[in-house]
Every structure is written in C-alpha cells, then in structure tokens.
Image: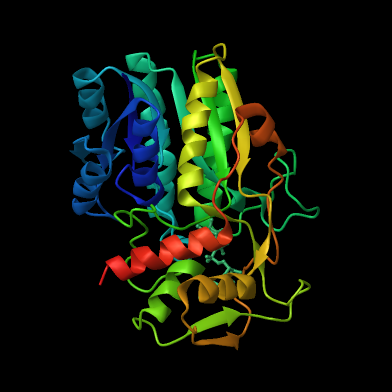
Amino acid sequence: MKKILITGGAGYIGSHTAVELWNAGMEPIILDDLSNSNEEVLNRLREITGKEFVFYKGDCNDSSLLKKICSEHQIEGVIHFAAFKAVGESTQVPLKYYRNNVGSLLILLEVMKEKGIRDLVFSSSCTVYGQPDILPVTEATPRKDAESPYGNTKKICEDILVDYVKSKPGIRVISLRYFNPVGAHPSSKIGELPIGTPQNLVPFITQTAAGIREKLTVFGNDYDTPDGSCVRDYIHVVDLADAHVKAFQYLAEQGSDFYEVFNVGTGNGNTVLEVIHAFEKVSGEKLNYVIGPRRPGDVVKTWADTTKINQVLGWYPKFSLEDSMRDSWNWQKSLG
Ligand code: GDU
C-alpha cells in the first residue's frame, strides 16, 4: 500500500483527507504538532476506518524528525497541510507565520530530495486571488498582492514550488487552491475544532445555534451582491479531501518536474445570508444574527471556475451547501 505522509494530518482538512486516502487504498502517515488539534482525532480516525494510523507528534520544521519518518516508512508522497492559518493573528506576528509556513515547506522539499520522494500536494488557498476582477476565478486569473502575511505565505510557497520544479529536481507537484472549506465527516466523528472564538463563518453559526455564542454578526449587507452580503464558494471538507486523492492519482501518471495548480470549490457562490438560511433549514433552528459593519479586508465576492479540476482530475463535488450545514451542525451537536 502506498504510504503518504500527511503533515498537519490531525487538523481539519488533514484528518478528512487521511480518511479519503485510506478509502482509496493509500496509507496515511500522520505528522502533526497538535497545535490546532488533539490526540482524540487519532482515535476518531480509527473508529471511522478501523485502522490505527501511524502518528508522529512533532513540528514540520524539524528536519531530523522528517528524516526519521522517511527512514522508518517508505513514503511515496507528501501532502503538506501543516501551517498556521489565522489571518488576523498573522498580521500581529508575521514572522511566526513566515517561519512556520514558508520555512516548513523548504525543509520538507530538502528532505524529499534527500529521500527521493517525488510527489507533493500543497495546500494553497483562493486567498492568492484576493478580490478577482472577473468571476468565476480560473487558475489563469492573476494573483493579487496578499491582504495578510498568512495569504502571502501561500503565495510565496506557490512561487517557491514553481521555481523549484523549474530547477528539475525530479519531483511532481500539485497546488490545490481551496475555496472555503465547511462541513464535517458525515459520521460526526471528526470536524473543525476552532480554538477560542471562531473567526470563520460556519463554526460561528453552529456555535451560536448551540448557545456558545450569543449572536452572529453578518459583516455587512450593503455590498454589490444579490442580498448585499459577501459571496464565497463553500466546499464540503470531504469533497475537498477527495480532491487530494485525485491529485495523487493524477501525479502518478505524470513525468518528472511537473507542476500544476487547481481550484477546489463547488463552482457556486453563496452569500452569507444564504448560508444562514441553509443552516436554519436543515437544522430547524432559528439563528440569532444581526447585521453589523463590514469586516476590514473582506473580499466582496469570489467563487471558483472548476472546469480544470473537473476535466483534468475528473473530480466533482458530491455534497451540497445544505449537506455541509447538516454535517457541520451534527458535528457541533456531537461536541456536547
Ligand atoms: N462572516 C460574517 N460573520 C462572521 C464570520 C464571517 O459575516 O462572524 C462572513 C465574512 O464577512 C465572509 C464570509 O462570512 O463574507 C466568510 O468568512 P470566513 O472568515 O469564514 O472566510 P473568508 O473567506 O473570509 O476566509 C477565507 C479562509 C481564510 C483565509 C481567507 C483569506 O477561511 O483561511 O484564507 O479566506 O481571505
């Protein structure tokens, strides 16, 4: 069985990807420092898959640990999720973000070179597009200056990968530009575990409905959108996880020194108010929300053109926005 190292494999997207890799006949080897997760996730993965995944607790910047993992397992590919992702925090402590997010990629690439590991899937983000001039966003849409150090780390990592592949190191790389991941595993055994007050919309919605937050504030309803609230492309995390499986299957058919980027979204944009209403419909809960001021730095509207990933990887999303809201809500309720 092909062994795939998943850095950040105990995190939100990483844990769901571990399940989908296993379902597709690949064995995930998980490395995570548990800075945004916990060991219970490993138990949950065992409950879902019936398999105890190999787990290393540690930092992806630790090259000796990476080498140790690669000498203990014949790793054939890597998915590099491990990164800090809080946009606001990144503006306060940018060096922490550059060191962790950019530094870990450099170390990982060096270890991959030394150990002869060819395939890498990198977690990028639609944040690299900023507010696009034309919608939907294709992979050819020009990237914009990043709005935050976090966003800049994703852009820089993409640039590093382009330059590195050009130097002909013998590797094959796909960067997946995620739109907004939401939802949880339909088993409700794994999902997003935001630390402190959630910054993202859907965890804030579910925590409000659960009574943990008093009310949700909709950040603006006077934008140039169908109902005035911002538009995003919300992709179910299991569909997103499946895109990583398809990416590996595709990489296996490519020659050396290959680099491609793919958008991963549904191809549909939804407003904040539409998300709230979808949540209310599937949960049967009335959400306490108010309209507040715009959030500085918010992109007004963005959604993906998914033609490339549909045609090239044969990947299509299976879950709807309502499925995502149902699974997010069931996950929230499972937390008690
Ligand atoms: N929103 C609210 N109220 C909230 C939280 C969010 O109205 O309490 C709105 C936002 O204004 C936005 C939408 O909900 O219109 C989605 O907001 P999120 O914070 O969930 O997601 P963003 O699209 O703003 O953020 C995403 C990723 C980040 C980062 C960012 C870059 O989740 O990790 O990549 O894009 O812009």
